[in-house]
Length: 226
Length: 269
Image (cartoon, each protein chain N blue to C red):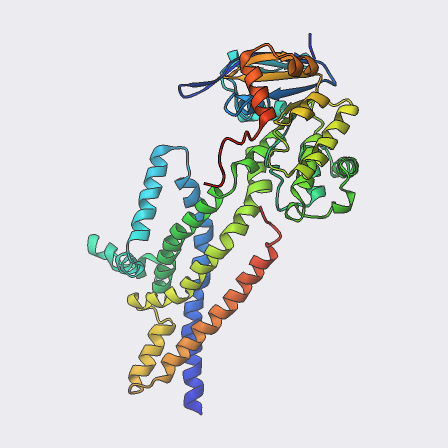
């Protein structure tokens, strides 16, 4: 029984690492996505081209490879560079790298969802705002924004659910998140199945909660119909 | 000097000259209808009047104030704002804001404006109370008081268009324009919108109506303008223009709009 309790606590600790990656990634990726989106919709051609090129690279290569490159790449280019030193000997420096990489990666996906959402708002809405004498800022915040949010909730839900599962990729840079830890537990206990099943249950339950929250939000916005 | 006057409006998109010199004027309280086949430049003219587009050449004055002068070149959005508020536009596809109720749709523009002019919170509250009272009155005028807390998606097309009219009136524009206000509506719904426009005429509203409803144009307007190929081909009093058209293009247009479906196309095939 004592073995079970300590195993459970270990599992919980590992899950909290997954949760930290998940939540910090969202906190970074949503505002960063807005910034990247405004870059990719900018009237300045050069800026637009650079941002769109960056999005293409990020979306066109595996997240796992990006993690490896960010984690080990700098020390390959600059001998003597160490992330651990650069991050001030922070104990969980690997998680920080995972969050940064996840954040930028997901921001690119989000930015494309935002862009699609903005483009899907009929021109007539902007024009209606114009003839009523609204400023561009007023048109964005009072007319467009809520309609965009309404339209992007379903695709964002998709990405957010994927993110819950993608956190398991952080194990490639030795972050002791849920999948890494349960795999370890299974191996050291001589091939036991239950840690892996427990991991599955954790992911599933968490995603169920996320899904409920997001569909509540979707329902709340359902009064907005074009 | 006329109340509202346009001189030599010209507008090109790329190599296509859509407006090729439009002149007309109207007095306060007058209703002018613009008719013509699609592609004649009617909608572009309305968009230029409402400063959604800027004409390349020409001037526009309202009540003696210069609202647009092509000689000054392209104007900045910021400068256009207050000028736009002196004109109103009702769109073919209503374009109500789907996230707001009927009441909020109508009073949003005045409230945003209040925010800019109010010097204190107290003043803002007073101005907003006044705006809300005005909005409620406008909604009563279009006969939708019982729908005041509904969202646009809960209304019929005709009701939505009536709300759009109230929304345009809320900023009290000097000239209210309609861009084919009933083209997206069933015949029954068309009637209720046209009734609202007739009512506005009775109240002395100055209006420009682009329409395909010939009977309505005849009934509501003091002057009808027929546009073709980017110019005013013919204009005059409705009786005169409809009964005794001079231009061959207008004769043709009136004939084909009267015939409507001429039965030459065999639907059974």
